[in-house]
Image 1: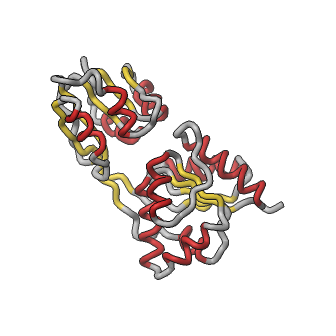
Image 2: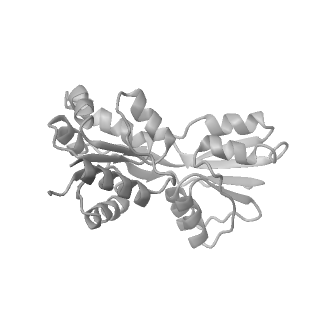
Image 3: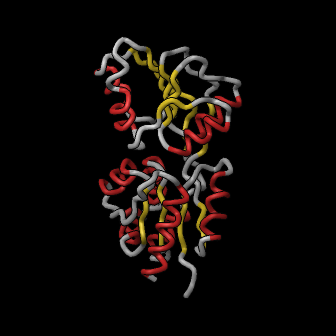
Length: 244
């Protein structure tokens, strides 16, 4: 049996190479197609009672800048974010069971009335968390740690999908779904690329990117129980092998 060809869309900051290596070790032919580049803003969050970080990228940017959480309760979305924070020497106080903005609102909602909460995220972050925390009575500030840009040369995966030559796709954020669709649209193959994914195993790391894909007409086959790339990669490759 030939190795399934699986596209991966991690940012082009070293993670795309690690992701491709993982797919290769799982017996897949990786198609690394970075849909995002990271542009740090140089900003850091202010002092607050609670600081919320949403990605390992944000942790790494702050650690490189010499920032520390001080006396704040550090809250992380996702195990990879928490692990990165702990590796930086910080104490993590909260990791919600649900790895998204709504999960963090549910985790902190009963504790933040009259408290200050600093959100430190990308420029593409949703309004769900600040709105929910403000409704819970928190004084919320938002800091843009980095901007996400789409590389001009991305889109190989869209071309393969449009030709029916892709066996799997592993989306790690709503931004990667949107980047895939934008790259396909620029090539005039958006509908063909979406149709091509019908015969591939489509995985999303969490419910948010899954919903973005579904809204665009992309059927999602796999969402791992844990919002972790390794779990996503294993699930997509294993299913692609069975389908092949």
